[in-house]
Amino acid sequence: QLQASGGGLVQAGESLRLSCAASGRTFSVEVVGWFRQQSGKEREFVAAINWSGGGIVYADSVKGRFTISTNNAEDTVYLQMDSLKPEDTAVYYCAADGLRRPVMAGKAYYWGQGTLVTVSS
Image 1: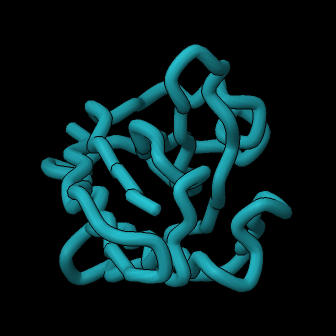
Image 2: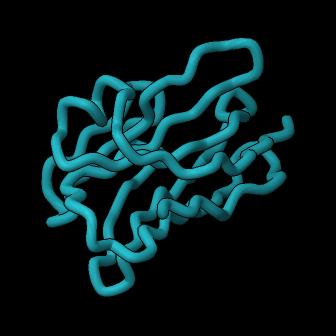
């Protein structure tokens, strides 16, 4: 019910926009987050937002470079990634829950499949 897309191969300094589409959004989802998992490392929080558009938070590592936003008409959450760095290379996941705490803890009820972002130097 969550479909992540938009990953790809880019060079350092370039941009990508990831999308997380919530199909059949009859379930109670209030908060959506983006996470990433680099090879050999644990999954880490990237950004989160309320469906209303408020409550935006970012990880320090992406603050000022990534922008999370919602399009309620399309039931889609976006992650605009600018000034990409090789260390941003990871599989990116979106997650959603009716509550903020599970999302922030990485324990959201709904998860999308990952989309791979590769940034070459």
